[in-house]
Amino acid sequence: MIVRAVKGVVVAACCALVILPFLAVISTSLADQTQVTATGGYVLWPERPSLDAYRAILAGGVVTRALLVSVGVTVAGTLLSLTCITLLAYSLSRPGSLLHRPILLTVLFTLLFAPGMIPMYLTIKQLGLLDSYWSLILPGLASGFQIIIMRAFFQEIPGELIDAARIDGAGELRILLRVVLPLSKAVVAVVGLFSAVAYWNAFFNAMLYLNDTEKWPLQLVLRTYVVDNSSLGVDAADLSGGFLPPAQSMQMAILVLSLVPIAIVYPFLQKHFSKGILIGAVKG
Image 1 (cartoon, one colour):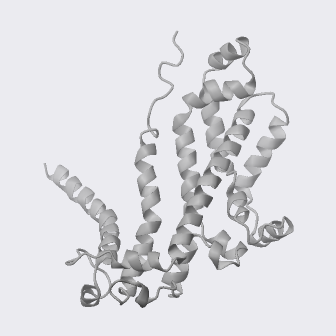
Image 2 (image 1 turned 180 degrees about the vertical axis):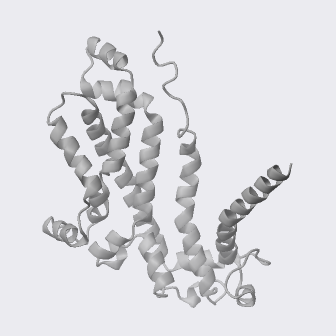
Image 3 (image 1 turned 90 degrees about the vertical axis):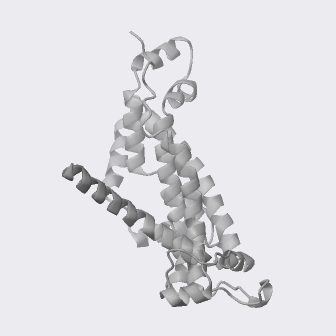
């Protein structure tokens, strides 16, 4: 009984450590100046909730534009990344494919030796991608780790299914689209989520390759505003109340906006993580 009580206390403490920071961020973004000042900067429960901080950051146009950039880069990057990773992983999972061993060794090599910042910058510059959204997408297009994960999953698919499809006259692309991918929703969801989170949270590439501030993604705007405490171009005259919300609330509001999209997408993909999709695929 005592052991169970101790376990319950430990679990509750761990949950509190996870939940309280999120609660503080959301509550502070909804708090007014008086309460933020009284609590020293962070609020656990807003007494008079207000959306003034969200109205303020969206009224300036900087956050709205950065949010659209982040969404566009994340969607385009994730789709292109999934396409490249899936095609390469499937080809590497088929023994005897063209240049199978050299390409596989190259992928494994990238797990051990990552390109440095200066060579990467020079490559982007030589390709003419500076100040381009492609500089945010192409460097992280194909992760060697994700390729290996998807390749290992494809290798677990029973060969009888692929042989049966090939006997029926299906080509490799049709086998991939009609046989392999329907059985691989779990790994596609996981890899897609990894790619989406990586693109959404990336700010360092934008800081290196983008000089035009109008092309900055949300994470770089968040870093610049929170770390450097720079202005978001919000004018108090543009707001209904005629005054700006506290800076702490505006910072937390930007942070909430950066967390919401991934938090919304995750529950729809979570069900695929542990789903046994191969059960019953081959019946003896």
